[in-house]
Image (cartoon, rainbow over all chains, first blue to last red; front, side, top):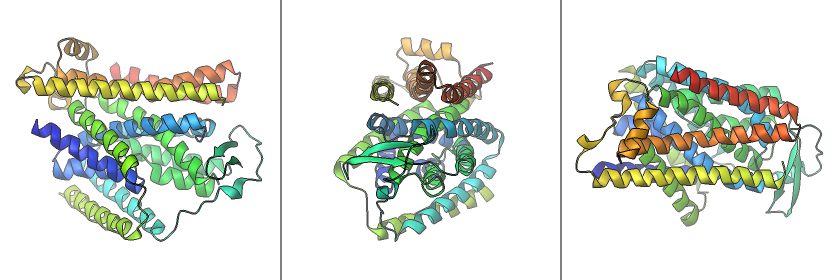
Length: 276
Length: 120
């Protein structure tokens, strides 16, 4: 009974953090399960992947219905991402815990750096930059922006580079149980010049499929604790719904900076544990 | 993609998530009301280092075993995005969008291939 409450509360807190800080939760969940609950890293990774699927499907249902997700582009990128995620999962299963912890600490640092770069940057609303673009390929698209009340057209550029980055994100997702949005969203926004709203929604749509493909490998090889994974799913879903209703996204840069510091400490702890 | 398809996709996601959450709740109740953990039919497979057995899971679900119900909820959740891929493959084929059909079909094959490879 006590175990159930602790797991649900942990999931709940991760769900709130995920919504407030705009992260999938894998970066927080894996270290929590490894460092606090002392679980084997493979079990933590599989629980994280399954939770990522839950959060992604919960959000994707709204984004797909609203037409914000670029499904065609998502499918193009997903082909490479799924292959890399499955390979990443197999690679993870054959790797030692120390190596995975070492790589994970690197990914946490990468997340912290990407967060640090955005600490002092306001959320620039850049949809107007795309108003005069026209559809030309199957991947170019438009969406109705509720904020300015009109259709925004955008053209997808430099696809090969985005495909490669997406593949790397998929590999990390399968290996470490993270969503990979930290790589995908900037790639789609900065390289392919997609509006940030579409990039985030498409990344979220893809993350669910990628994490599902990766977690299948862990499930089939029995590297999963269904109780831990399911209770974390429940906690995270309730936590994120609670956070959506109660809090808006945190704008205070000091809290984001605090999160960066916490990530750095967690990264060091993972590194130390990896080094034995 | 037209609105009808988008709504159908949204419903697949909603149903998948809701059914999975429902099974998690059922499993949690089963877990709380069961007298001890020794009652569970299925132990977490990583402890015994064996592969997953679907027949055992279904048997456990019928016997109201919480561990098996947790497994079932997890499998439903993980299969939801794969059903989305299958549906997308179907609508691309129906709309004669063969480029997108090929992409969706290949993604589907990789996932199904992984499942078959894992089981065998």
